[in-house]
Length: 395
Image (cartoon, rainbow, N blue to C red; front, side, top):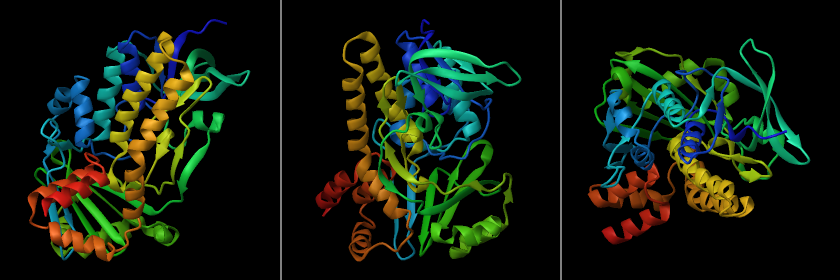
């Protein structure tokens, strides 16, 4: 039976739609399916870090995001109690971050994929990943209220999150695994203004952050160690609101604000998965997932989308064998991600910084170049090793 599509992408959010858009722009026939309709919300990270902003600019989508009225974030602050670090998260070419509502960002990305020529099927449930002779060959599923259909492709791309159906079907090797570390939750408020900053407060066994988003609203996100998950899940709202008591000034401001959304969130496991095999590939959280405390999910999704689209183009065009191109994708992903992964998992413990970290934070407070480096490391703009070089050069 002939293959109808070059690629079928399962999942249409921050990893799937850009992958589909980039492949479609290269002239490939791409189908995107998602059980959601757009616009719609999702439990996920929200910050578009400066490197991801750079990707939007390359794709010609940054002006579209700016036109939605999403406020730019030019400063990250980290309040550790005795020490506060404030720095710029970006680079000269991509100086700011954004914290858009996912209802707006994801719709923008879906529309961009459709505009590039991808076929989008919303409200589509994948029932089965077709595997023939040890190779993924397509999908079987149905639109809402519709009959089951089968679609075939050279490659099925799983962009469907950490609970990926594609990953469940192909059972890829999983490595660098760590259990859930943090129980994170978030919500939105009106009447809690914050201008151009992403403020993070770290206290013993507690942490929370505040950032501006669309329509004059403010995102608050925070959590506690996973060891407290079972006890605290009986009253998530109460425990979430108590987070702000650690900083009385913020607690007072929150009491004067109006919550405009439910409190959402969930603990996540941490892992890398092999992101390719015969007839399949994984991008975004489907292939590599970590605690959201460093808000790297969108950054990672956009980077994966560009790299996997390049690798698949090399394979589809005959320039390189599939395994060689995709092997390079895996190596580049892992090499880029591992240091941030370890940093994130350590930060997610919410344990007090070790003495050497406390000493370093005290030393860089007030040194703007070093504080910018700290903000850039947390934003994923530079690696922890590059930050070490910045601190060394700042003395």
